[in-house]
Amino acid sequence: MLFEEIKITFTSFKKDNISTERKQVLEPLIDYIQSKVNEGKNINLNFICTHNSRRSHLSQVWAQAAAHYHQVKNVHCYSGGTEATALFSMAAQTLENAGFQIIKLSNEENPVYSIKFAENEHPIIGFSKTYDHVLNPKSEFAAIMTCSHADKNCPFIPGCEKRIPVRYNDPKEFDNTTQQVEKYKERSNQIAVEMNYVFSQIKK
Image (cartoon, rainbow, N blue to C red):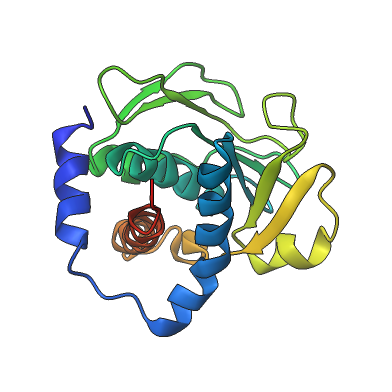
């Protein structure tokens, strides 16, 4: 079962409006997932951003939770960057505030986090890594480009079946400001709303 706070979040989002423009952006991702469901194949989604520190992790985690909520089976969400840095602490804190259970497993420069969305599901292991890291799929996956920089500067993703741009504004610009907590929550909620919409459209 999905943790109650996350479930309530998804339930409250059902009435939220997504613009026609954003629905058009999300349509290729919906089509890719639906095609895999129709074929009875695994759905491997690798969310990619430059540093794999904020948007790509938020997208990975919310997408995995949304797939579970809408009972879309065989969904495996990953994330990576064009370079490895660290999962930014405010991104992890924002997910924890949204109801995910976060455990910091290491205190290195690039710390490793356990991120749980449901009592009996494997946690997502969150840390910054490149998109071609050993933990990420090497073939039969969609590369979801969550930032324009990675999309432009990484024109070729080896092994991906489909490249899908779903870009989000970077909350990093509000780091060390009085708006930091608010803006990270705003971006996280936008991603949650859109991932919820994507998986709600899948016919099983």
